[in-house]
Amino acid sequence: MAGLYLASQSPRRTELLTQVGIDHIVVSSAYEEANKGYDNPIEMVKEQALGKARAAVGVPEGSIVLGADTIVVLDNQVLGKPHDESEARHMLERLSGQVHSVITGVALLIKGQEIVFHNETKVYFKKLAPFEIESYIGSGEPMDKAGAYGIQGKGALWVEKIEGSYTNVVGLPVEHVYDELCKALGAK
Ligand SMILES: Cc1cn([C@H]2C[C@H](O)[C@@H](COP(=O)(O)OP(=O)(O)OP(=O)(O)O)O2)c(=O)[nH]c1=O
Image (cartoon, rainbow, N blue to C red; front, side, top):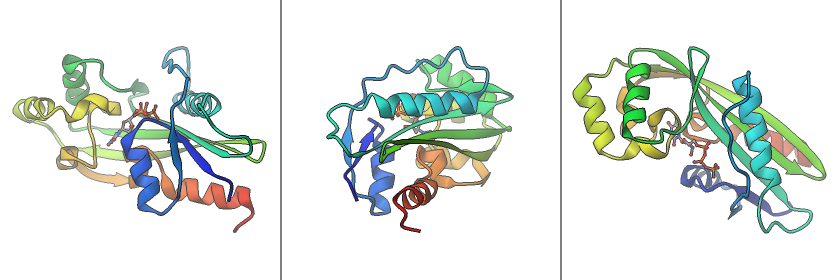
């Protein structure tokens, strides 16, 4: 297989690929995320993922490039990464006791094709007490994560159940990525 370049600074995405044995090289992307101006959250994450992949830096000709973007959607409203603690608090108060979707857009540039898809997981959140929200914010965990929580960390305490892919919530639906890679490479 041609080398796979992951255009992402997210530590979770490289960990997930490594976990399942997909060799890759992490590179940066010159793409500037712009979460505004989209009517449809799915179109938005797909566009962002494609933008990140297309703007990957230092990728040799003929390589495979992977870009991704993850958001939380609650009542048709997009929750990205909080800008500060008060936004994180507000997001967690909104998620408390509700069901939301985590949507990841993925773009694969492979053999001259642009394969763009998404994956959606429903997450059922428990009701959070104000002291729980405060201590979670104090842990610093919410700040670099869409929706202000990490299911792979202390945020696991707030999740009652999920419907769909777990790795999708963490930032990259590896089983889906693997299937698409196999398809594009004619391996399955
Ligand atoms: C909901 C949720 C999100 N997240 C993370 C995954 C993503 O890293 C982040 C969403 O931000 P993204 O903008 O998708 O990604 P990123 O800025 O971290 O990395 P890059 O743009 O360089 O690829 O939220 C978790 O780690 N756990 C969770 O449970």
